[in-house]
Image 1 (cartoon, rainbow, N blue to C red):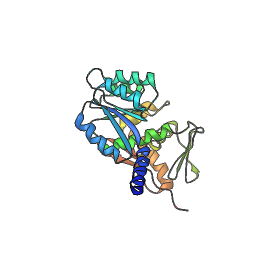
Image 2: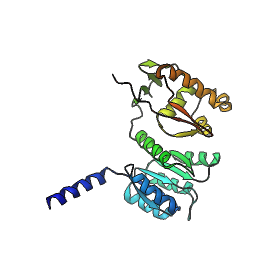
Image 3: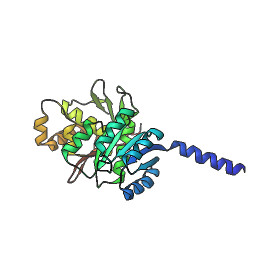
Image 4: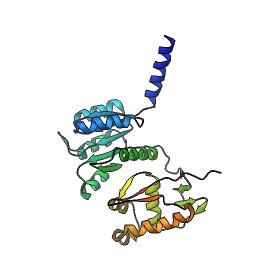
Amino acid sequence: MLFRAVVNCNFLYHCRLMTPLLMIDDDQVLTNLLKSYLKDHGFELSVAHVPSAGLELFNKLAPKLVILDVMMPEEDGFAVIQQLRRSRNVPVIMLTARGETADRILGLELGADDYLTKPFEPRELVARIKAILKRAGQRPDEVIVSGEIVLDPVRRSFKVKNEELELTTSEYDLLHAFVTNPGRRFTRDELLSQLRGEDIEAFGRSIDNLVSRLRKKLNKYLGEECIQTVWGTGYRYVELPAAKK
């Protein structure tokens, strides 16, 4: 009896460690796949196949993040996210087969934290979930450490191996997007949306030139590339481990 009690306690302990997520999507094959896959990565995924059921679960379970499809029965995801936002400010990833720029912009304007187009790699979804939850748990003024890179959002500065980088506004915004989203695959359009300042138009014509300049500045200190090219898509940032002291 004692052994059984210990096993049960351990089981309950591990259950409490699972991060609750909610997915509202009418694709039952996909939701079943992700429910199993996300469980292996420490997430407990609850699923609803219609918006009305999803909103009920949202209010009942208080998930840490919502994965929301756009094209569904009853009403689309754009209408659903507005209802979610009226209830609680929880992170939302829009997950849909519609990849047009206008749809992505609309989703983000309505409060989505990220936008992932089907088909996709489940591990990319996991990377985005972890990045969003990490950001949600950080204070706006909290210093972010990524391997040898240190970001100070108050001073808008980056240091690599204790050396401060001299960055343009667009270089800073681009590197900030990479460091706060490790493992995420960015398209060139998505990177362009992260930029601000007078030189946006120029970089819109050649985002690759901006990435190349940023790589050169980082490689001077790191010795290897942390910004990787995803052929046919764009770029992703890979966190390099800090050197042992």
